[in-house]
Image 1 (cartoon, protein in one colour):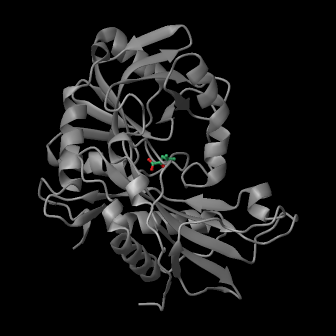
Image 2 (tube, helix red, strand yellow):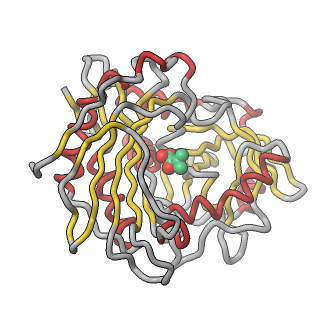
Length: 355
Ligand code: COI
């Protein structure tokens, strides 16, 4: 294990937190992991009290967004251990994002050891109630102080932890979506497949407009034709049409979600027909008109499974499963959360256990 500097907080903040009223991402634990990159290598990792980071207004990330992040979760398992869901896969995706953004990759073992140490120190912050978890947010950004547009020579890496409840105020209740007509999220060759800050910045205007109209989120269509379905808000999307479970293929414009991969794996394991393919909005409308569009749901680490009750596309309104939670959405939610909380066997080896 790489040498690590550890400085503990003098006073934990945990007693000030109301664990029965957790939202998403507004409470942070006592400690954070950090590491600086300079002289062409990542320096010694540190765990220190969660606190301010000193930056100058000339920090290149503030101007040009050379920044990546991940989002994964730790759960309080039935046997008292902490279950981290798909930890290795998240670290690999973090490094894929780094490569696309010209950020030096973080050594996998250093990342893993540092995170496990941090989780052990802050294990009292992992919520114990079902439906709650500890959201883990690793991120890295360019740290040069320079206004030239070029690859930075210095970087900072952090992992912060946040005890969370449901991502959407709807909880597990169906969300209402509107297709984005005037805005696109990404195009082939762009950065749509990686977790970089700019993708999320670019999504805000459409999401804000959708919310002003009373919708929960945006259903993104492809950037070229505004015809093929891509993602929903910050999640991947699935449709059950007849007996076929369809999700847009990974063509470089959408994120390779971990929950997406888990849903595909589970559904295939249950013997379902699963297709990763292009799906046009017209196909969805036709299926809805014919009555074969049975269910739709979004998948993401933050929201897990988010049933979709309604889609508005131009003048057409599709009501899905009478606006109710579907059988498959519920079955998938129960299967995934069952594995995460250690209530069901981890048949596929998705859980990293911390005793
Ligand atoms: C996640 O589901 O982890 C996401 O990345 C969504 C996040 C941007 C809140």
